[in-house]
Length: 138
Image 1 (cartoon, rainbow, N blue to C red):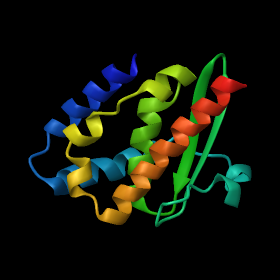
Image 2 (cartoon, rainbow, N blue to C red):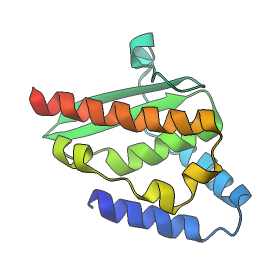
Image 3 (cartoon, rainbow, N blue to C red):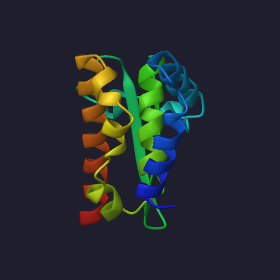
Image 4 (tube, helix red, strand yellow):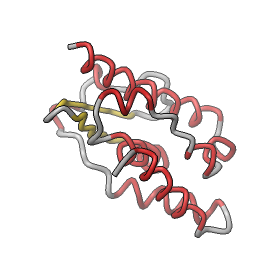
């Protein structure tokens, strides 16, 4: 499945909900299905800078595709990182670097996050793209 197809799937899932309480609950549930980072990677160098809550992210390159695992100590943030892992994990570095990630605006996420959470989301995306770029140039 391409990044764009996954984005479309997420847009359709969020359209089911009439209000943001339902969308937040859905986001929290997504966090429960997050591919968990191994404890050995929960180190300061894996923390995403710019997030108010603590978010750890690890990536590795397997068979030409970047695999992300993550965790957070905050439930909504954990859902946000789960969303990003779902969209970007298992894709090539080029696909990740070139992803427009328009679904973030289309589901209304940027309008309904506090400024600090919004900054955290931008930091997550930036870190994921930087990891992909690092694998591309290796």
